[in-house]
Image 1 (tube, rainbow, N blue to C red):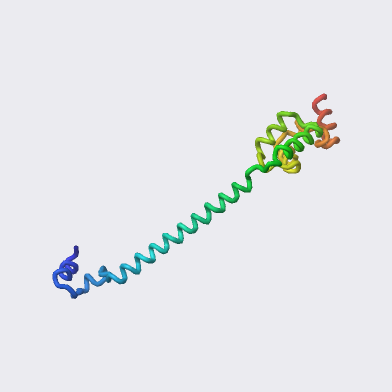
Image 2 (cartoon, rainbow, N blue to C red):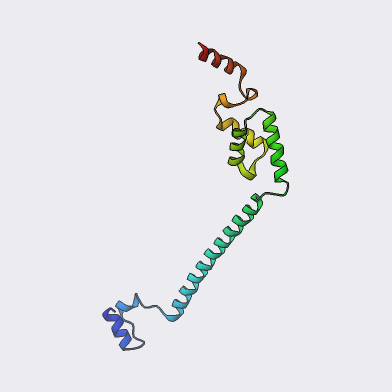
Length: 136
């Protein structure tokens, strides 16, 4: 304790200049404590809201009962478009439950080497010029 605090403790009701800066009334102490508790409560509410948002988004991302048939249709269509089984497996693993035919095609076209794409997805002129370069 500083000397001023020791003196104010010895003589109740006396506040010296040096102890005035550190002296907090019981009422002010309770008010500050309530403010801190309010701040903690607000933080807990924010965290609860975040958790509810995460939970609802994970529920929304969960597969529906129709997912297997939808996935089967997508795989069949990709096979018809002449993608290989390895390519189809890669896109299904990458996109998981968010897969649609459109997202699968986007992913395949962006992530596969142009030469690995089925002929339908390559520019014919580019393929011809490439074959001329490789055969020359």
